[in-house]
Structure formats: C-alpha cells, structure tokens
Image 1: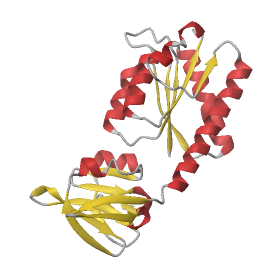
Image 2 (image 1 turned 135 degrees about the vertical axis):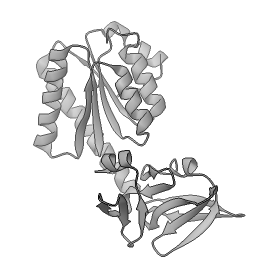
Image 3 (image 1 turned 60 degrees about the horizontal axis):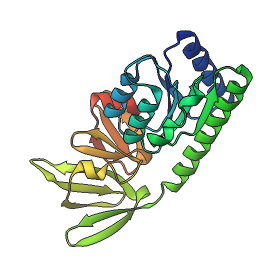
Image 4 (image 1 turned 45 degrees about the vertical axis):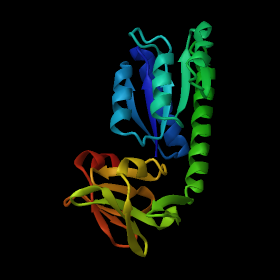
Length: 241
C-alpha cells in the first residue's frame, strides 16, 4: 500500500491539503493511506527509520521554519526511500534549483497560490504514483538470486514464503519455499533488500508480504499460502494490519 506523508508548517494549509488528498483517494478508490500529517520533518525521518520498506508519496513545503527545510528533508527521504515520490508545494520558486544540488529528483513542484491548480496537480501526482505502484507490483513476480553454498540459485518470488535465522546461529538461514526449504549462510539484513516484497517482521524472520494468507493477532503469527507460519513482532504486526 502507498503511504502518504505531508510536511507543512502552516496548519490551515496542512489541513486543506489533507482533506484534498483524503477526498481524492476515496473518490478513486486507490490503495493508499495518509500515514503522517506533520509540521516536524523529523517525524517523517523517524518513521522511515522504523519502517524502511515504506512505499511513500511525500508532499513537502520548502520553507518549514525549522533548521531543516523541505529540500533538505527531501534529500534525506531520498536516502531512506530511493523510490519514494516527492512533491514540493511552495511559494518559493527561487529555491527550486536547490533540488538539483541536493539530487532530490522531485516528481512535481506545485505553487500554493492557485487553489484550482493545486487540486489538479495533487490529483495527477497521486494518479501517477498509483500507476507506478501498480506497475511495480505486477513486476514483483520476479526471480530472486540466492547464494547457497558454492551455487547461485534463482527462485521465483511467488515461491518464497519467508526466511528465518537458525536458532543460535544468526548467520545461518532457512529459506522456506512453497514446496520445501533450503539452508544457507547469510544475514536477514541482506535478504530484506532483495525485493520490495520482503519485510522484516521479526528479528528472526523476513516474510514475503505477497504470500501472507492470514494474520493471527492473538498468537502474533503470520500464516502463509502454503500453510507454514512464522512469528511477527508487535510493531510489525500493527504495520502489516
């Protein structure tokens, strides 16, 4: 799911933008949610540190009246979320060249002084982000490369359920597949970077979100399409739900 973030120091403008985004999502029935609406850029960065697999769309004011301006925030977001969609909404057109200096690669720049244009451009930005998200999701049925012993093995993403560490040996992993499993040396931090579909659900488990069939909230377990189960941490459980 795409997560929407707003960082704007003006409360009235922030509220107006939130309402516009919520109405647009509802009207188009897009798979998005407004995750954070804040005046504090550090709240967004803290969230991304906690949830590094976030697929985000970021609406940022440039002048935030804090030590960190919107362009600097955009650069930090880009470091944490390379494929995130960043849209600047501002009255400071003269600062836009700085986005090239900071290598932000923004999706759009929207002027605040034209309400009708804001509505149109915000809607179009969300539409493009949604289209890219759907295209990426379709492409996720890819082959994942695993180094197993002296061999390199390519596995269909759709066949991967989860990867776990062997108890007592954090460098030995078990790859759980639709039919069977295989052990190899590695670490979970590297595994979770192999695909956007992989999510670190517990200190000992990385799950393929595409194959989660059921969430057992009482026992904090994920049940996969082949019937196997793995544990999920409290914070990760909340995020998945």
